[in-house]
Image 1 (cartoon, helix red, strand yellow):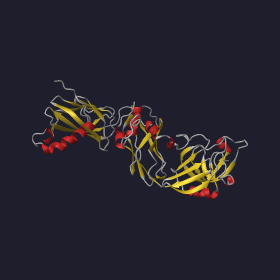
Image 2 (cartoon, helix red, strand yellow):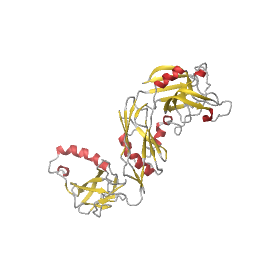
Image 3 (cartoon, one colour):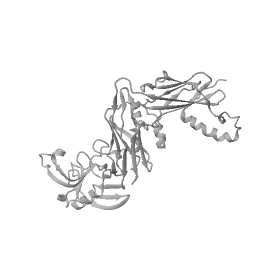
Image 4 (cartoon, helix red, strand yellow):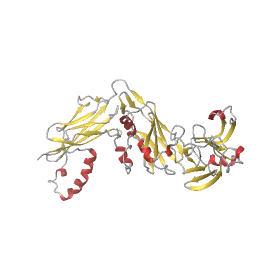
Length: 420
């Protein structure tokens, strides 16, 4: 009778072991093949490829390979990881005769490889290999990663950012980068990366960060090959504290701002927004920075030398776009606040209200404008408009989650292959 080989992976093996182990109590200790101590599989499996020559340090630019030697056993499982706990991914052939790494080895790292085999009677064998990698052969340069924002306390809308000093375009290479970036939070949330362009990624949760949570971003990419001649450098971990949930919603049609803290309305502020031709952008914006005093000019928005030109000092200025949209004090328009839109695009309020707003927000808090005749806030490039992207669209911006169905846990998502 013919036998169809079964693909064996680390995941499937782990799943199979649960019911087998649970059934040991009903079997004789001597009759079941899994009831005995694993035998020494030294004669059944060998290192090939980069590690075959027995060198003290092997070339990290070459794949790691294992093969069954034909001494009556086949490979059923391989667990390879370095001293830092980073796992080396690989694929096992259907017949269990060969295993080959599918992600690159790290340079200057020590590795331990634990191999499980199975003989014709289904008894399990074990063999462990240890080796070190050396430096990469040939020319190579590090990929520098810069994490953002700076360490501190931020609002619930603050995205995490990673800037690369070299472009990464290929989906396979992007997958290497994403897999090496780890975001953890207390409490845990569902989140994903989004490739803004070839040199920048943003990370956000599905919903705003939980109020008063802690967020940590780390990289395990140091020494990992991204592509030929490009290997990731080190990146210092980033830790953020998240403050209260602060969301300020400005209705341009009613000229009122509703200020919420932890989902409770705590203030209603009369405002003025952009007049026709200078309409304030609709959408969710994340506070970028705050300045007690800013000089604003018409030249900065392209109206210098026209009838719309201006040059003035503005107080209690909270920036929400890099192009110059602020929430700020506008004592010259108090008569219109709450009744008309007369600004050049900013949200203006009285001196006292602007100071109160300034003192009750921080970078990362969310300012949303609704019912304006203006354009929609850009998702990227003019500040943080990340929250204007739907969650389904956001997931499409990651090579690890693009095209995958909903319902995965963060752990499942991290194991997904890139959609190529």
